[in-house]
Image 1 (cartoon, one colour):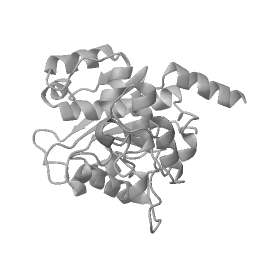
Image 2 (cartoon, rainbow, N blue to C red):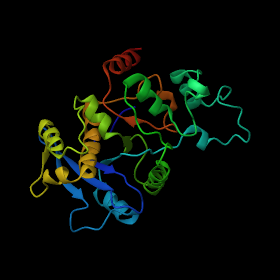
Image 3 (cartoon, rainbow, N blue to C red):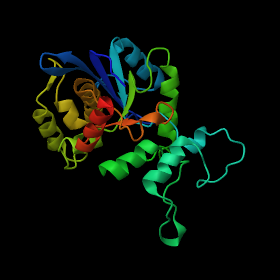
Length: 271
C-alpha cells in the first residue's frame, strides 16, 4: 500500500451525534513539518453536529487525508451475511480466522471467551497481542452510537474520501504512547502543552493557540489524530504483512509501527 503526498491532514475526535464533544483540527504541510491552521469548534461556534462536521471536512478537504478517532469499520459478525452461524471455531471468515490465531481458542475462568467477533475486529486484536496497546472495541461497552456515527461518516464522505487511503482510523492515545509519551494527559492540562512543545515538527499558525488544546482534550486529540496522518505519510507506514490481506473490509487503526513490523515489511518488499 502506498500513500499519496497529502498536503493537508484533518483530525476528528468524534463524539456522539447529539453531543458537543466532537472536535476538528486542520494541519497543513509547512517547512520542516506541519502547522495547525484551524481548530473547531471555536468558542463562538456551534457544536459539530453532522451537517456542520461534513461541511467543515468538505471545505478543508482538498488534497487532505481525514483521520478519525473512532471505528470506521464494523466487526466481522456484524458484516456477515451467512444465514446460520457455524460458530466461532468453525467460521471461515478471514478476519475471524485471524482473531482465532491472535487470541487462540482457549477460554478464561468460568468459560469466558477469548474474543467476541461481534464486538472486536482484527485490528484491535493486533494492537493488543502484538503492540501491547488496549484499544476500545468497535462495539464494546458504550461504543455503539459512536461506531454507528463513524460508519455514517464513511458513507457520507465516500464520494471524496477512500478508506485506508484518504480516510483513516487513528488512535491518538496509542500514537502518543508509541512515540514515548506514556503519562496520562486527559486530566493533566499542562501535560498536553508539554507534549505539543516536544513535537518539534508541529507548529501553530498565528491566531491558532496551543491554549485551546490545554482547555479541551477533544481538540488536543483532534490535533494528535491529524498529526498521526502526517507521520503515516512522512514515514511511509504500511500494514503488517500478518494482517494486510484483510484490508479494506476489516479496517485498520493506524499507529506508529514497531521495529518488528518495519523489519517484516522490508523483508516482504525485498521478496
